[in-house]
Image 1 (cartoon, rainbow, N blue to C red):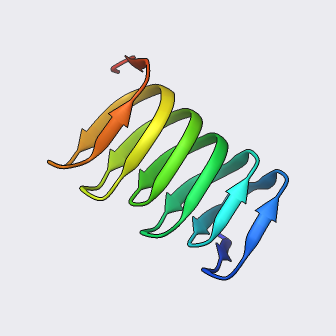
Image 2: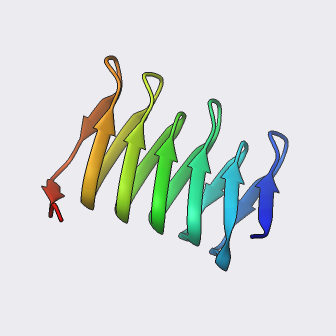
Length: 104
């Protein structure tokens, strides 16, 4: 699986797509992110929709999240409408928005 990294000093305005890969966001993306897996690292930010099988948020995200498995780390700050099959959230993670957990 291919891994693409958006480093801390990189700001992207536009959509990011990696159909069969992973996208690590350490910088800022203003646009939608679509991949097999998306990880928003501490200090990273996505202002747009995220669509992936697995999504891990350690940084900030606003927009919409659609995934199979969503993990929110204690440093996560999410302002989004969420649709996921499963949700794992650590104590301290913030999530504001409509949440729909579909289960198996």
